[in-house]
Length: 127
Image (cartoon, rainbow, N blue to C red; front, side, top):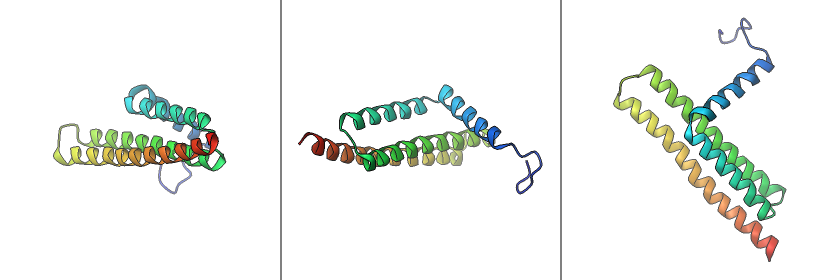
């Protein structure tokens, strides 16, 4: 596809199908995607247990979506780096490490956010 051209441009439905295909491939092949989805299930259960309100649910789901999206981006970056640099190169390794560090940083901050949200919701619900 040529950027800015309508030639060979997929339909909206095909675009969604490509995205779902990409997610399914990442789920089948990447351990960390499964871990992130497990964390999302844990967060949903905690939200139910702590009786989160609508705003808290919004924060929790936004955090989960951000972490999952960041992990998918990290996976795509690693895939492209492996494509253009099949042999080990220091800069390729650095790019992959930095992309992984971005996901790690987000996970830590979203984890802290989850503790704050769930603690506040639990205190309100059970006090």
